[in-house]
Image (cartoon, rainbow, N blue to C red; front, side, top):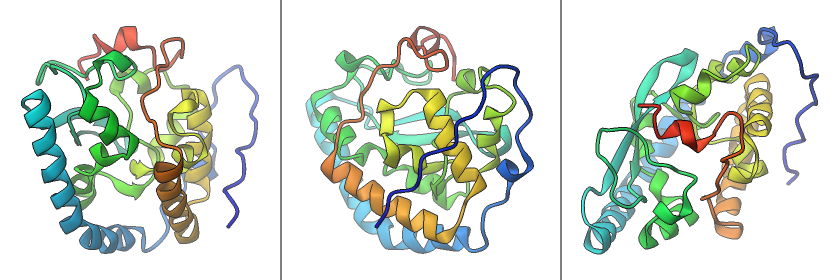
Amino acid sequence: MTAPAAPERHRTGTATRPDADEASRSYRGKRLLDLALVCLLLVPALVLCAAAAAVHVIAHGRPALFRQRRVGREGRPFMMWKLRTMADPAAGSGPPVCGDVAQVTAVGRVLRRLSLDELPQLLNVLRGEMSLVGPRPTLPYQVHRYTDRQRGRLRALPGMTGLAQVRGRQWLSWPQRIEWDLRYVRHQSLRLDLTILLFTAWAVLARGGTTVAHDDDPIARTTERMHSGA
């Protein structure tokens, strides 16, 4: 199996509107694939979520779940669910500083390494707010920093995993991730989705590690994340 090819390089400078092919629709059957796989995964995922949540509550206290406003398809906001991995979250008062490794609990580090903290997003997939594969949903303040061209990533339903995640996960800068996301939007297909899902399983088991700081990233600076109210 060959990994998806690298995204094309684009000129920097004046922002332009997304190309017509970057605004392409998802392929026929994508929703059916989501529902079929979620039905297969839901019961074991619920068992894993319950066990992971119980361990986290015993070790670090309540709450076990964390929800956060994210930006979905065409810029529509929704509440995304995760298992809590951060210490002493301020429930309902805004997002934690995800790049601050010191804030991640001991149990949370294991959940993140195995991506178990993302399992509650299967409920978002069932609700039609997310897909199994697509650009990762981002925070509103990050979207405000996008160029017109970068907003093309919002043409696709956000996903639990995506092309950017199998090409580098959080080690990529946000501009690099967006280039992979734009490539996915242009080339959505059943074959690509299945390839990404297989590479995701490999990335989680072989690479691990999802807590990376991007304090110098112009799109994802954590100093503003603390005050975004997202």
